[in-house]
Image 1 (cartoon, rainbow, N blue to C red):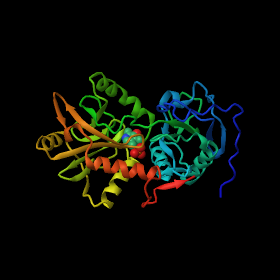
Image 2: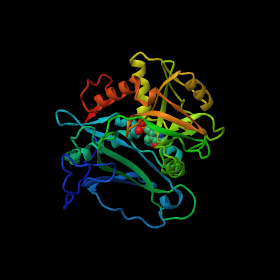
Image 3: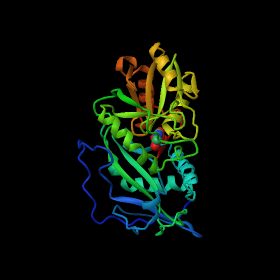
Image 4: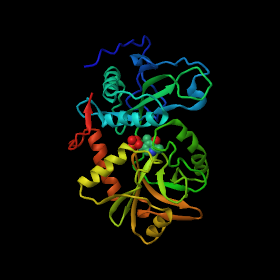
Length: 356
Ligand SMILES: *Cc1c(COP(=O)(O)O)cnc(C)c1O
């Protein structure tokens, strides 16, 4: 048992969005947030739930200058019986520690973090939307707070969890997207921070995203940072290919983010009897396989979209279309099973769901 987490109630709670409101993503925040502090010598201390409000940091706080920070992303789902569930939440807080280790941030206790998150959710459960496909997006993050401009790991940190009711990722249905293969900029390199969920990776990716968008594409396919040859990820999702009926994804190599949805897809695929393979896939190899009609489906995987089918890839001056630009049966199956389990429409045969 953990000591009680003190709660300071928000004296001015906000009106909840209407049942049919367009929630969008990450724009609305609930009335409370979780906070705890780290001080050298004392460790993590003073966990508390307080009103959602701006935080006060010294302008010299290290996070602003050298980007020492990590974040996570998961969701709470309303069940048919009105209860609230989380999907494999411990994996997110184990990944916090993998990210922390890379960024020289002291580790947290994953079980305590899950406990603290559940406490916060119990207080905020009316904010979990009931609309079809909507969820309460959960954003845990840690920032370096020492007021110091020298370059070294901070000696103090703050850990926060904020909550944001968010609408369905696919209000118009699960439509495949077109993707631009990025061959100039890279997201991450081996030995760098690609496997850590750290804000700098996103800062570094914005330019390619903006260029792809300007060219009429919604996301980029990232190639490896050394050869610009091997496929890594799609936007901020992991990527899967169905090649001759086998489910293939790039193996975790240090520059790829170890997605929890990626792991879920691989485990589910095995359980459904599909052959799976984690290996390097060169863009040239993919191109040849695709042109020979051997790549039946391509999809991204991540918490936000769950499964995001790819209808078209553009690489240099060439384009390939997958499954006639339609979502394929395997992508649809994974989407239906994973969301079915998350929203409690389907039996949780794998014990992936945790009720708060
Ligand atoms: C978070 C993230 C993913 C997906 O991870 P999930 O745990 O499945 O949400 C993939 N790639 C990047 C770069 C990410 O930041």
